[in-house]
Length: 485
View 1: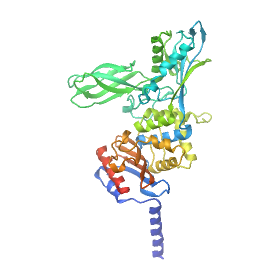
View 2 (view 1 turned 180 degrees about the vertical axis):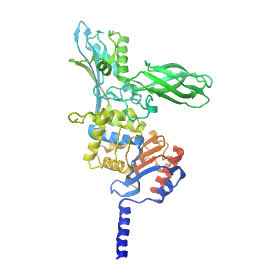
View 3 (view 1 turned 135 degrees about the vertical axis):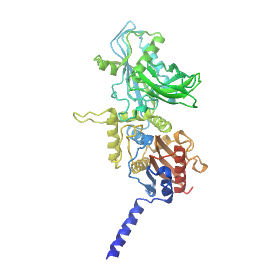
View 4 (view 1 turned 90 degrees about the vertical axis):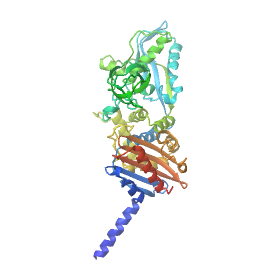
């Protein structure tokens, strides 16, 4: 009787291993490396068509995904908004137009377009100023007694997620996302550096900013900088810390525009005046006017609406260059679909996250391991496991949006953040992966095509030791072993 029970237990154990996949020797070798002794690793590789598991290790373990989380945001955006969706931005006026003088204000109404003036869509993305000025001229407006006012009220004022790290606040990659965004919400700071130990001199910003800098930088004998631009959203004050290379006539750092809607209002007003249309008032924005109790809702007349590139193009850029602003703007735009319950208070981030979770739950995915605080993956508080990502990848493989989603993933060994991953000739044209990285976090997720079959691949490593390049080489060996390359 005891042997009979033992046989049943052995059968059930073997069946569980087969049904949930095995841990090949390559994974055991990968985890046995000294650099992985304190690490968390979640891995799942499955054939899409049959659902056959090629490799599974800790597939249910929640880990920090970093920018791999963008796959969740962009897939949801494609599903709900559609490939051809374009963000509108509308210029309007209020008041009375008489004898070519507008007794009123010009408004810029934002709908979350993250690409307005973006370097990634130039030169088309930078034509908007000329188009807006021409629309005002066509209307016959030659003078404005009011001001240019940015209306960014569609989203809240929480530009950055509350769980981002302090070191990211003020950086160009940690720029806030608003209903009005401009020039990737980033600027360049140019310095002149002297002898080691001296403080660099601030030359200028481009585009020009009204920022007060507290300069604690030091020049040092280094090849590249190890510096931080730190500051809060909406506050035109920044602190400079760290070291920069000595003896440079012109050295560039990059930071975030503190208040993009206000900057855009000032920029457009300056452009109108430069082109001979004087504006008497002071440029402002919804956040500032509401704070002062001066925001008013008045009848407005549309002058022109300009549109972004298509969502398919935006999603492609989002995943190719891992653009945090684009991803967070997409998440907040999804949040506009959220139906708030009576008395409920949710941020623009929170509403977007609720929409994402509801969508994938309705599609049958288990959303319990998905914990999001932003759409970009910049916060280390984000969590997900390999199984959820693999299920999402499998779903998208059969979605009508699959072609656009697949095109958004950079080709390994060739493009974007994975141009140095899987560079061996045998992988050429057969792997499309999104990477994610931050301190002691290195993740990959996407598709691999081998032997005419498409596989979903999810590799999530946290808390490893050693260099990221060394970890990449071991991940490459792991994949090579799994696919017998």
